[in-house]
Length: 498
Image 1 (cartoon, rainbow, N blue to C red):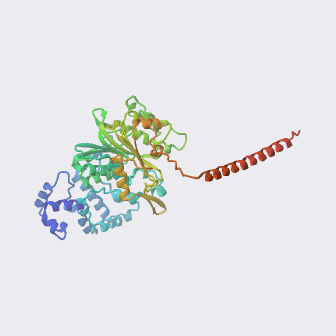
Image 2 (cartoon, rainbow, N blue to C red; image 1 turned 120 degrees about the vertical axis):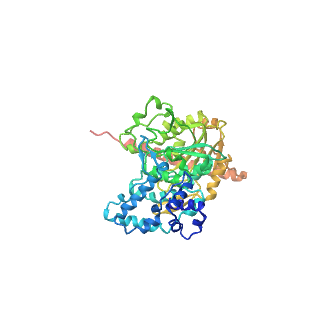
Image 3 (cartoon, rainbow, N blue to C red; image 1 turned 90 degrees about the vertical axis):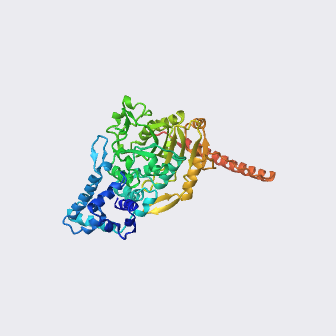
């Protein structure tokens, strides 16, 4: 935020861009000059007082209780920008933008040192050069922070993170032509990687973002992502809450419909405490395929992603499109909720295709995933089923392995899908009737042609092969007869004893 503020005021004041240090130059402004500069900034820009600058925090490190001064500065930034920063929970409560960061350090004697360490790392580094390009600020940072989460912390949160390659493929396939004035939604948004890629593909000024996520920390990171990616106009639509139990975004008393939906929902979660509450008349159509049974043990393995798929289907506008990360097992399951969902997608003619991704494409989980693409306008049924599982190269990250797609491989997936090109053992284009004939399977491999190779041989070679087969069969028959005789002899030796 400090660097984006600097980037924006330099656009307004060329002398700041020419100065060796824009912060020192701007410190010479009178209070009135500084206030006039803030008024010239865009209403969607995050504004800072001069005492908010990182350089000021750096110069105040000797302040008694520096950690408190540091936290107070963050809080004051949030208050100063309250008009654009404030967001609500699903129940209507307001959430501040920043936490008191130093309070996460349990040893109070180390809090000052912790805050000083942060400032000392940031003061000589600038993010300004990236504001000219499309950028998701938290994707790489987030992956770094959680790369060992499965090993160290139980792994529950890992599924929320979507690798950049997957995000790029989803956005590039969804947005295959220019659009404007559209709504974009993620019911399990996390830090917003999917939404950022989607907004950049559409154009930040041509879309409005909506989201809901149960995690307050993720919602806070998403808000910062919007601020830093020129999407401040959507901040009021970022909601912390339980999408499945209490979806927030509505028009009147009905759930809002969206033009584009992206989601990498949690696959498994213990929601046994409220699953029974979902079975209401109002939810009959939203959850048409039903709910999972509560297992007697391993409740944390309850599959919640099918509820998100149903919610997304229900939330699409008349010509809406969606891309959803699902476990690959979903595309072939022969019973249960998953099968009912696939049948509805075909019967309602709202399927655009599926891309099955390579194993270990997620750095933090080995679950095989596919991307499910929906399109309510795809009535003809020009459906692309793609098996990209053999692409990518394996790299080692610590003790785990990760599959990485090259730029060319990403482009191959995107172009093959968008051009509806069939490629041997890679992609096939089918219609709704063909999918019905395959028992509603969405797996590309089940539609690939099985090729039988023929080899010309001479009559002598044919006779030699046949003789070889006969000889092998005769040997097997002989062994079978010998075994048969031996079994009879063993049975005859058995006697009943009192």
